[in-house]
Image (cartoon, rainbow, N blue to C red; front, side, top):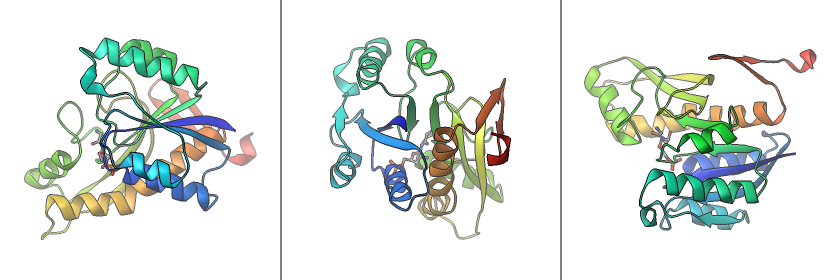
Amino acid sequence: MVKTAVLVSGGGTNLQAIIDARIFGEIKNCDLVAVVSSNPEAYALERAKYASIPSYVVDRSVFPNRLSFTKALLEKLLDLEIELVVYAGFNFILGPQFINAFKNKIINIHPSLIPSFCGPGFYGLKVHEAVLSYGVKVTGATAHFATEEADDGPIILQKAVEIFEDDTPLTLQRRVMEEAEWKILPEAISLFCEHRLEVEERVVRIKGVQDE
Ligand code: GAR
């Protein structure tokens, strides 16, 4: 079983999707040992409690800079002997110490089809506001390995979602979550934990069960 920590900062609906998918047997070989929040008020912490998953707070606001925050998080995850890190609505970019310790072992979910509508400043509702103002007809979500750059790194899974004429940022956010994020994030975690992901430069190959 792959020892997994989910990092959160807010509501935690993606964390809930992971918890539910595990209950339904849709994530294989994954031991969800920790939820770590950068925000002591995050509702995600309640979700962890209801699911009896140990939770920890590494409060970003008490650290003077990115380096000290990165070091504290790294120490916590190394203590817990974590093998897979999942950013599920985690709002921070961590420094190279963290990324190097978990190279191609951090999965992020982003609510657009990368490389569109991503990077610094594109998070949460802001992504959907930008999508609607640009007037694209299709958006979606991307599960990818995280690097030191925002929403960069090899893409594992993507799923497209149609945009309707009467969409608001809120209706679009909800549909992208329901139709894309809550599906591809658990699926990407399962593929990782089943050792079915192979990374070559930017490209991720998904090995079939028969390839093993
Ligand atoms: C989700 O839509 C997630 O994809 C997005 O923030 C939301 C968090 O919701 N993440 C980003 O925009 C990262 N660039 P949640 O806390 O309910 O899972």
